[in-house]
Length: 358
Image 1 (cartoon, rainbow, N blue to C red):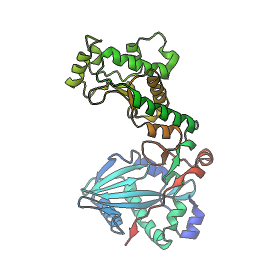
Image 2: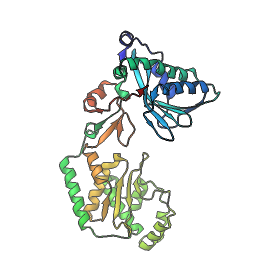
Image 3: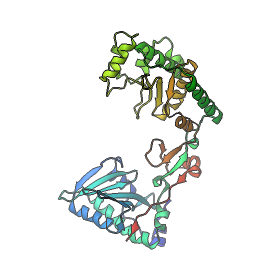
Image 4: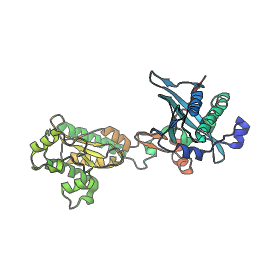
């Protein structure tokens, strides 16, 4: 939401002095990283004055937190307010939602005038928020800075039919009851099991490739010496390599590589876990994970599918995506006609949070 500058003047008696593009420029960065760090006593006193106007939202013996103050800004001829939290821990840390963060400690460093102006504007906005009993925030906090959640079925487009999901879960549970135990494997055994997965997920792309070639094509490739095992048919040599632990830090079992988090892992069986373990971490690979699991079941390979119910819930579109917040599954909501048409009516928006004023 937002107010035109004219309505802001008429209804609130307020007009912002800073522009949104300036905030983007001066705060640019990851709001969850350490951000820019300043040692400036005047800036520190401004933040101290700001936090002194409200009760901490949360506190313990180590820190205090205020959630949220609001920075009023001009954007496209309108007044908007951007939420930001402050943490007091060995100085102040201000986190501007989706824009960036800054840390402030006492000192004599020079800083750009904008940072002091930003906190002055936040202070100047407080009487307006109080007078309107937070209505000023409700009218000016745009939806691209609000948080919420939305069911995956409104985001993914194509989803797995509930019948297919139930059928796979039943097949897997039946297979798990009947499967034989496999407490050890050789390198050849392991690559053959991986090849079943590759053929199921990538079909024609595997044509003419040996299991090892498939591994080199799709895996992380940091095999930690696994492919250097001399006797590839020996389960003892594979067990010795595995127990030695020299592969720690490598990713020999990430059979499908992903730049984000991890892709798909196929863990070898052991005495403690007498079946192959299949896991997907980056859910963009969830459809491939399902194809691989089906193939392992069909080939009667002992397998434990980790987090299968969660994966199927995701594919069916029943799990939630965070909106304008960073979680495992999330989307950014932008103030565009496309996003409004596709997402808005399906988003469950979080209540607006404002600090409790003194």
